[in-house]
Image (cartoon, rainbow, N blue to C red; front, side, top):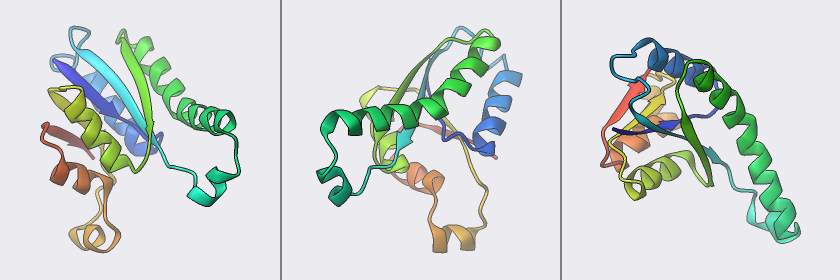
Length: 140
């Protein structure tokens, strides 16, 4: 099974990874994992005055801050995973990557906002659920 693991480096990512590694019957080394993070885009006005190489390096550095600890965590538990990042809004990045990569499952942490909180604040998890055709496992 191809599994897309969406991470943002938060405590909710840590909880989700803990869940993943304690349920070996579902998430063992026999699965194919890709760890994905979304890096918010630099505002267009700022990006216009930054050279392309500097901007590319900035995005890669920001992604690596999130991906490196996850990679280390998974490798320490015998799970191999590819890592990837895209620039954009997290919900859009996750949904589009899940579709483009023909993943069987998306796993992500959720902040667990109340219904009212989601209505007012919006939520990456809510948007992924609404826009992603791939099954999504939310870990709270």
